[in-house]
Image 1 (cartoon, helix red, strand yellow):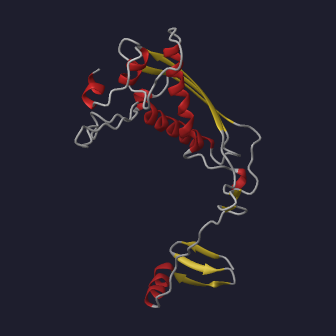
Image 2: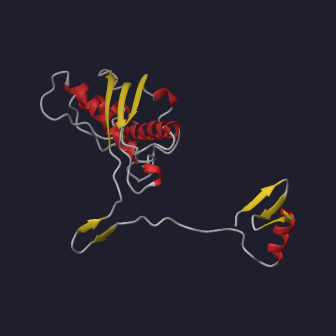
Image 3: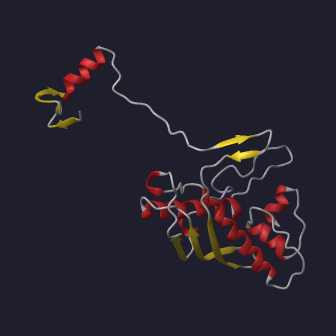
Length: 226
């Protein structure tokens, strides 16, 4: 039967008259070397994959989303600013909308940093130059869009999961591709012909080079001070 814990006591449904001190039970279990912990793991059902044949179902479900981003780009300095983001994301049937919304916001901003500011630079000797907060720029609260709109895909409960929910931690990161492509479109709006050679991450230097059709230099110093 069920165990009950109240006021420092413990007792079972089958013998409610027998109440023991919780501390005494713990002590006896410790002296008898009886584990009071339980261990388990989740085994995702219905997944399999035949590598030789290239067939199977390696994932139980997919979490999809779409994003539209509006940016402002200064072609004289290469600076960009994210003005607005609209996201529609599939979270299944949300267990906690506020947590899911926070996960989407955080994942998106992390992806934006990956694609616009977090640049790794090495010198000719192979030493990493962007190794600190002053040279490796991660997004901050100031990089949040002025207008951030998030909606969940309705009627999207996932069969076979906890209350129809889906994982929301990492998938939104990829939606930040919309920021990079918005920057590319902003550069193209000036009338440049052909493909815009915008490298990733789309830093100020990369935007400036793309806007002025400058080739990407392999020299780190040139790239930093172009």
